[in-house]
Length: 393
Image (tube, rainbow, N blue to C red; front, side):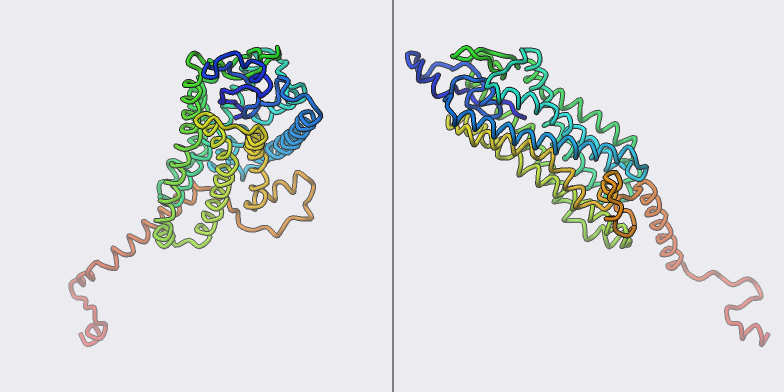
């Protein structure tokens, strides 16, 4: 989310307007702030250094955009193309790829504004771009939370997987994730607009009511809690429960292949979640430090935002390295069949059928144990359990 929640202005404009009281609330702009601090052409150093910085940042954004669009497009294609990929887990990954793809579509607006050093697209597109950017950031972390809950159910409660881990349930959950994300970003939809900077250029950001600093601080905390801390705590809880019961579940299941498959998927989801935390934590830290400590480094802010965007192009690479099915599917659509390894058992199983098999095996085992505990049946009249006695008779 490239929203700037820092209520600061550029050094040049603040120095030129020194007549105003320093404690007065400054106009909310994107000057020298996280995400769009180079997008409004506010005159913050119009020398070669500033222009070269804008060009460098725009180049990095462009590379991230190309990689993110191509990689997530492949993920979406292979899940729709191959029937074996249409599992509950993959549908959650599909939702994550769609969110990352839409997030990448806002990057061209960021690059254009960075090069022009102003927002040239008007108030309507400002609200649309910021809203799309925000909903996809929140949707991404909520998708990862759902994936972690999915892992918890698959590993700790395998016999209940047939009820909760079906494609139809996954589709319904994905719709609920988007609706919840839309509800969370309502403040961004309501307050996003354009505003003039002190030099006459136009900035795109959230225009908060008075007192602006308190509203910005409240929004920074709100975005941190709803878009990072609470979901990460839920994810950590899921994996703590998985680790605490993984050994017991594995011994009870008794399926080496299923245990291996679950472990591979769990590792992949764990790595994806960890990369998300690493990519987005600097962004939230920079936002909170800027709001509460009034310390802001434009370069550090831009690097934090770029790192957050880079997470969207990292996920397809992780799938290719950590999932045999995704790797083989990517090789096929890229015409790299000669790189394919020998076919192995699928690491994405049909959990509906495997859960039923687990349940049948469990029932059979219980019947066998019960039969073993029953006393021997009484012999029929005239019969003896000792065959020699019958012969003597």
